[in-house]
Length: 140
Image (cartoon, rainbow, N blue to C red):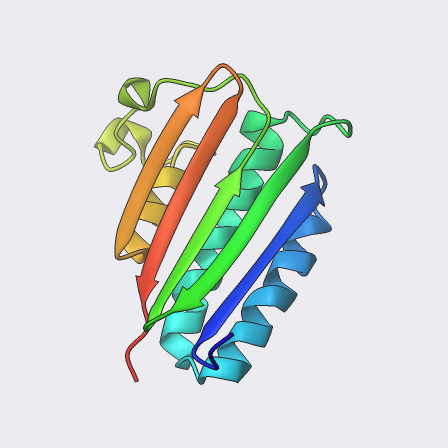
């Protein structure tokens, strides 16, 4: 494979320790492709939100359910897919976390954060789970 390409797929357990596994993968990519500190921080925050969302809202911490995590780097793009095994949801029913009445709520900002930090963000959801796709442009 060419030196400007990286792909890794892992199946994560529905537990908080999965964040460490994902962070190690992103750290490996950061070092290999010389990703800036700012870009690295944004990527880390966004994937933390995606994985936390998959574990808590998608899989409801059920140990028998897994989170698929795939990272691909190619042509200065970092493409990350996080997929849970939950029952799905309707993204149109999410409350606007920027409205004043929602600002102090304990949850509801994860998708907004993922959208804000990534260059491209997609959600696909069904009764078999939710899939987040986050794409980051990595300038050199």
